[in-house]
Image (cartoon, rainbow, N blue to C red):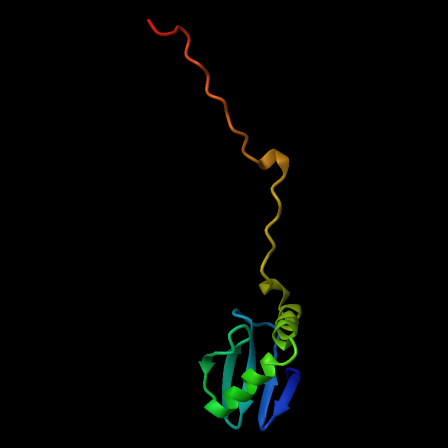
Length: 107
């Protein structure tokens, strides 16, 4: 069972490990469950009554919670964390090649 992050007005908000992208939370109300994108607050799988979705969205918008919840998502699912682009080492950088002048000249 995943930890319940919050329970408000009958809506339970969960986060799981062994997940998939996009980063999301599970919102459960009665017999309904929806996967809600942490960044956008929109449902991408499942369904919730509009007033219950609004509760989830308001919860995500409180006090930088989106950033905290997204970080928690990646801590539980480290293989899904976007990789930072590594700096190219000097030896990998392309060096411009000077063109050789043709021998002989104009006649």
